[in-house]
Length: 106
Image 1: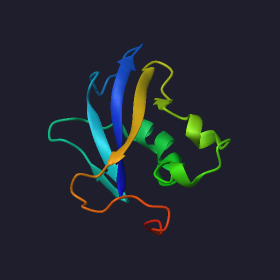
Image 2: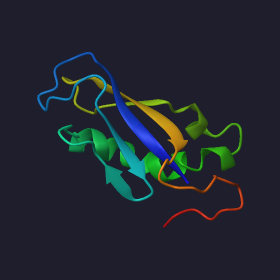
Image 3: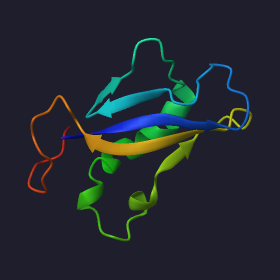
Image 4: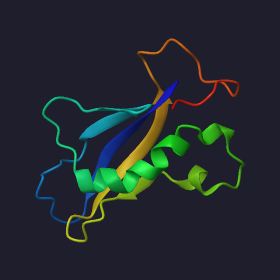
């Protein structure tokens, strides 16, 4: 299976959480994995959540699908302007390879 790494790429405003450039967390199926001591903004997280299930299936989508063009999200706070990079990577804890025949996770 694959997982999604969400990384703070840049901050163009003021984040009162405060997140820092380089902070990251992982979405592994329906699990959220956060390194100890790193905050996660629930407002930014909720804005990204709808894309997580489909992003992990990106390779199965038609070439013109809009999800194939998504590489980043911005925090919805107009003062924060925190930009998050979304990277799809292999899950190191999972010995399985991603294939088109595998059913998606529920």
